[in-house]
Length: 434
Image 1 (cartoon, rainbow, N blue to C red):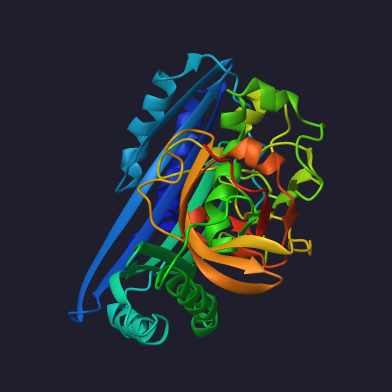
Image 2: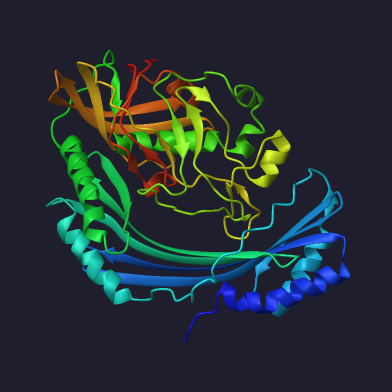
């Protein structure tokens, strides 16, 4: 039996929206209908057993603008009849406050294709066995191997007859492997038809991590600069993407005042490209119906701007840039699509500490604005790895760390475990001691 999706719900929603608009002629009303399906397969490698689970969610969010008033309401729905009380609730909650601008009418799209999530557990079982057999280094204990497939579809309706629709599907594999110095966690996206190709970098990173974390180690030389390979640098870039969100900037006046100024070294450029060919979330528009074009947020050290939804752009007097995304039934909030540090070909130092493997910690940002890492690797002299170094504990304040960035490599990699952000190798000065 076909699962109900937002395009079926939209048929009745149009009539509900027209009726509400006729009763409240001064209001502009928006309905966002969303369907999501998640299929998760957990593979217990040692025992050879599987556990599958799936969930379906159909929800709606309503926004109402009437004069200087704005209201929002959201709820799970099962039929068009559930939308009438939702619109009434949004109107009742309308209050005078920050004036959230009415987004422009979304451009008309081709009809949303039939929403048929892939429910093939058997295919995922074969895939999980293949990954365990070909990706995990020999002799390594797998604590967790999880395959997740998500299928999402949404329809945006506005009084006046405008509407747009979009759908996407993604699949990821998550691995946690045991080492004598802690667990290593990694993940990759698996584009349809490119699964084996996508697994190659994961296989390489896991082999690098095991080689760095197993065997005799010595304390790192604190006088050497740090070279953070992409798996270690990724949480820093995820933290930077958080710092560049309009809602965070709204509470950080000093950062807002730095727009147009050279706040970072020239080696740092940051972009968010919704259609990057290697990006993990490729979209042409955001959940407010605005076009999402490529944005350069930092240009050779100069801060250019921030990620904005309609609300945060209004609060800061900026132009929206199509970054209003929804998490579940929440209102649109500024979020990146495929934010990344622009790769370069800066030379590595003659001698350095190369960190290639990040040991799992409970959180990478226990304090806002500071990323904490435990990472292991090698001491490198004249291009040769000469000895393993014991995993180092690093507390890296985001602003200070990026202000001292000394170089950027060419090896751009995107990570599902870092909010989809991408980073090349980053070169930093010697760590602060004490």
